[in-house]
Amino acid sequence: MNYTISGLPERAVKPRDTGITMVMDKGLSLREAENFIEVAGVYTDLVKLGWGTSYVTPNLDKKIQIYKDAGLPVYFGGTLFEVFVARGQFDDYCRLLDKYKLEIAEVSDGSITIPHEEKCNYINKLSKQVTVISEVGSKDITKIFAPYKWITLMSAELEAGSWKLIAESRESGNVGIYRDSGEVRQGLVDEILTKIPADKIIWEAPHKSQQAWFIKLIGANVSLGNIATTDVIPLETLRLGIRSDTFDHFLEV
Image (cartoon, rainbow, N blue to C red; front, side, top):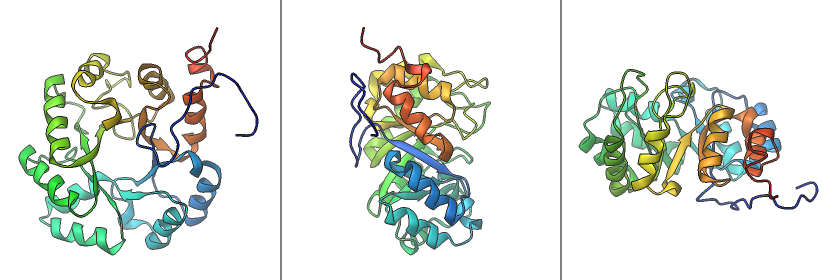
């Protein structure tokens, strides 16, 4: 840090198991990726190449290497996994991970319907090859799961071999754990946390109000995802209570 401020919350140090910031790369150029790393790489823990952007991104191998050289784990968005599964190409997907030497894979079923036992089988198979992050929740705004269903799905996916669980919100932040207004479904979150350890969940929180809400609920070291590349430093100030939205929460009086 550039100077000393007393009484700030203590942040977990990298490599972090809690307080993870997962960033969404929606199609940065190589130079933009380098600039992002220069400014925000120290505060970033995971980089997701959003949905199927990796298929159309020029110089994909070079971009992946840029992130790796910076010590930032990078992985394909869960929608790409679904694209392959929907076409009967799961084995091709596994080979793709090997081709780009990726060490993380996201398993999701937000765009297609996969029987949950089958999804857990995919998690189990992939966990023998890479570290698996699995996403729970639908991208369909009309599909609202009861809290017990979230808990059942999350528990099964952890047992199947997931390292972390992602609570779905899309990059828009208005489905899954959020109402269509973007407001957090507080009762759902509270119920989930009665059964699923907070350190196992990455809450997708693309908007400042959502990030601040989870920081106030769980603390500075809550794991948050779908963070825009331009929002990583603003998020870090929220975590530390040096932005108005969380100022009073961490202020000792």
